[in-house]
Image (cartoon, rainbow, N blue to C red; front, side):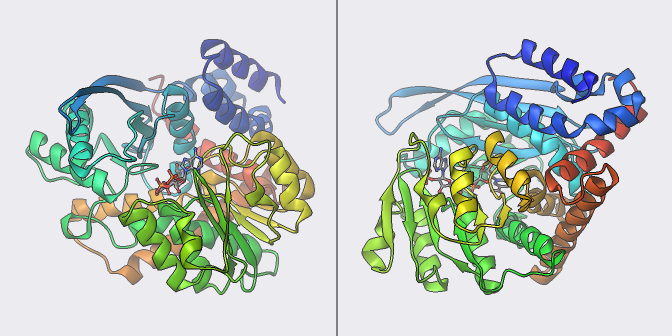
Length: 453
Ligand code: NDP
């Protein structure tokens, strides 16, 4: 690791010693940047590594609301406006009890490089709350979203900051937040992406992260003379990213065999086909049920309970050739990665953000498997969000085919840019370094050009 990278990491660690997820994300990016710092003293002179790891602005606020029993509840709301050098802040809102500043800073930091990789004019941001929508009525969720937006709206704008969904924030939550934003700002602009199709949403936005993640895997395989057809695939999660990943795998004749939620996972050796996927979607999105119910309907499947506290997750021990982690951060540790490799997985494409921990990544790289890091592989979602913003600004609407074609083209470009950057800095085939380097260069050059801000 270059001396400057080491020095910058120590400064950042000393400043936020209690933000482990944020430090993990910074470490992972900066490890790749040594050769760039050696070649370009101008970044070191401009203290670019210290600057880019400090958000431009961090908002933290009280969100009071009343539950259905008329009891007052208080949650904490956040928005980390990380970097706007190449466009308005852009990144999702996450509602989950685990949300804190460390998690949102890790997500916002990753988002800067991911958004840069898409080639779209979007900066990096992230936000959310420790509110848990699970088990809450629609009315409770609405009151919470309205209270959150009563504060957040003054910090947003079509040319300032445009949030989107993430864990716990789907179509319902986006609707309530967008509605309140529109009322308070007295404007109809495209502030919020992931909107419903009748009120400004883009076709293919719901599908984009999952589809994009599969397109990225396909590109990595194609570059090595292989394809997804016939491959047995492990998918974790059962939310937006996981279900559309399964859908695209089916289109490409692969065989997805697992899905999970925070209570455990199902393994269906016969494959999750279109009928089973429709059931899964209804179960999780509409009935808001638990994944074990899949096995009462489809006898070919087996449910295994997990708590998230085990030394390894048995989902990653199922025999397969490809893995698409699509639930949450650090869901694959070193032991899981070694099980994946032992059982024949040779392609990992990350739908979730930072799903593999540093030990897992080290094993993929050592084994030289095809590893698509999150900031490249799951960038399709935010890329189509940028297309939604473009359509809203122009008051036009593209067809499904048009948006899907653009998404596919964007994923091909991301793959190429990562591969080229890796090769240029002597790491051929290392998409993790390639993504970090390509994402960084564009933002750093824009920051240099705009002066010390
Ligand atoms: P959803 O809320 O739709 O689904 C999340 C899924 O992951 C659910 O099945 C949930 O289970 C499971 N999950 C969440 N937290 C945990 C946990 N701590 N342990 C085990 N399982 C968990 O979210 P998304 O599909 O939108 O997001 C999934 C991942 O993809 C996240 O990392 C997100 O940041 C990332 N991502 C999402 C994008 C998007 O466009 N939506 C874009 C880019 C990245 P349960 O139902 O039990 O909560």
